[in-house]
Image 1 (cartoon, rainbow, N blue to C red):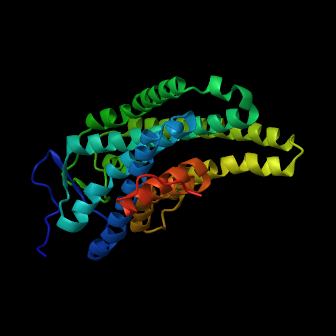
Image 2: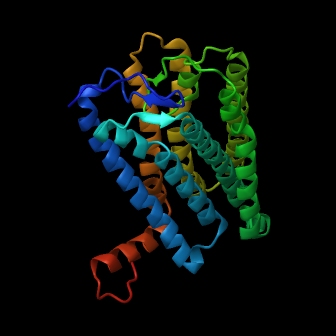
Image 3: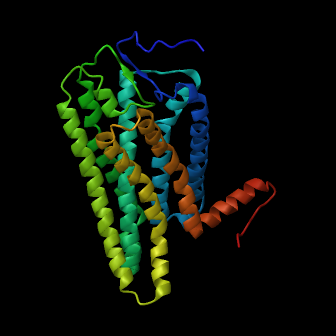
Length: 323
């Protein structure tokens, strides 16, 4: 393969370097990237398809699952196609506007994903602590309005990030040692003062993550208190079982974020390609596993997916009722 010139001739472009130190393995790395991405799209689109087709799944809980599926599709699609073009075709150039746009949508969808998890925690709180009023508190219309609030909040928090970066002058070396436009990596290329950018990024991340984790922790604290008041062990297990899937999804979402933040600040001895691989896995693994977790733990969804899967395998089948 011909050597690639890493100095962009066009001052309006950046160079995404992929995974520095592992350039020789890019083709091999692309295999799990492509496989995980395809599986993720298939699973999440299946969730959206099944919920849209089944009238009895038009409930708040499943509408929230659809929101989660949309954010999973969005967050992986913002990153993986460009990463694959780097691995397969050495298509490493990206315009400044394209870079800032990618950055905006990555963090927009990630912020929305976090807010959806908060809403799902509230859904579980109402279902367990106030089940008699569940259908009046959480209606489909209210969930739709909450979805709009989630979108507006994400725009307000994320929009300043690319706008603040856009005002900065960039140096001659415009190489980003990453597979996507990561704000800190972009800031390092600037010849200007990035103090405001760093402060806003830190504050916005802290406010969003800490605020969302606080609400989630409060919801589960109240759920745990309500469960402990139940005398029946079987009722304990049933109540906690409804929260298991959501807890697993939360751990997969927040753990990599917190780990990445800590390693960026305190893990200077860790090789850069380890940081980049972990950052990319965050966009690949949770979107692939989330539908599986909810499919296993939610019987209604599991049965309906099974019905459609059997219909696809048996073209002549007209009806199927899972056991």
